[in-house]
Image (cartoon, rainbow, N blue to C red; front, side, top):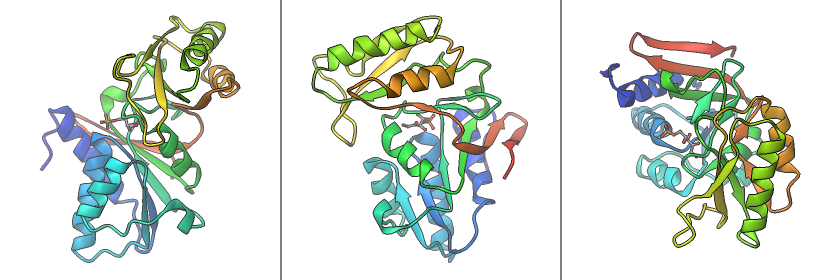
Length: 237
Ligand code: 5RP
């Protein structure tokens, strides 16, 4: 049973609802974060009970470890031609299923895996649904070389794209910067509200030193949002 009065209970309920989208023999991308971990755990229990999956691909080392512990058939992304479905959480989403991801630092692999999938299903508690993306700081993965210059250009791109605020923060701080699974750094943009996500995404992608950003635009087809009254579905598929 899920306690729908708690955020964690809602995350688990959304993960449980995603299991209904599975079919035997699928190749499934596994997201990162606390909601995705509920999905991995529930999927592991289902596989243990006899449900046959062809392959799983993890979006982070942390998810890979969890998937291995649950006996999921983990493969390298290069070993599959495509994935049938990826199930992942989000830090924020809007009604058009545009997302901010990367709060857990896995945005690069998450985006590569989502792009390699026939469809992406987002699972989240309903607090993640917003009118304007950007209250959650937007993660941008950058190379360590010359990171201060890149971070300054990232802040300038946010300003030029009309964001309500545009300061950047190196995740973990200069003394102990956080490193991604790819060995890169993350700067988070405090934007408050991103009025034109497409414009900011294009500007960020054009900056030398930026590896990827956490705006997932047009990638998710369905979102399963759990609130106090149960799970509702946004989108088609
Ligand atoms: C990790 C992510 C996560 O999906 C996002 O941070 C949501 O996490 P949670 O399910 O713990 O709220 O993008 O990089």
